[in-house]
Length: 149
Figure (cartoon, one colour):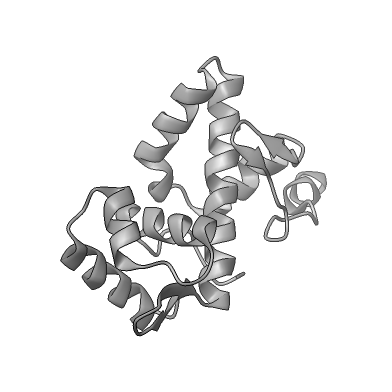
């Protein structure tokens, strides 16, 4: 997932991917629609767009599931949410306030910025919303290497 910027998807599609990731395989349109409080036709259109971009598989009469690309991207999305929530919590917001605020802007924060924040926080492994995975993080500490030059 080195080729992603973190800015590929709209905030709404980000929520769909995160929901699919949390629910697992074969999530039906009606489930997504009820959870997101959105008309099923809107869900179908958005999920089909995600499918054409390679993030989602559609199994007729069974539902939707994430492709490997979709799973990798969803893991980054969760990491971004958790790093940003932890940062806001560190600066005085409650857990609930942190999550709510991050949902408002997380889709506009690049992978590069998330990795820099993660690096500056010492690569935390647990945030206010759950475990933070570092598979896609710059654990080579490029930031520190640049400072030494």
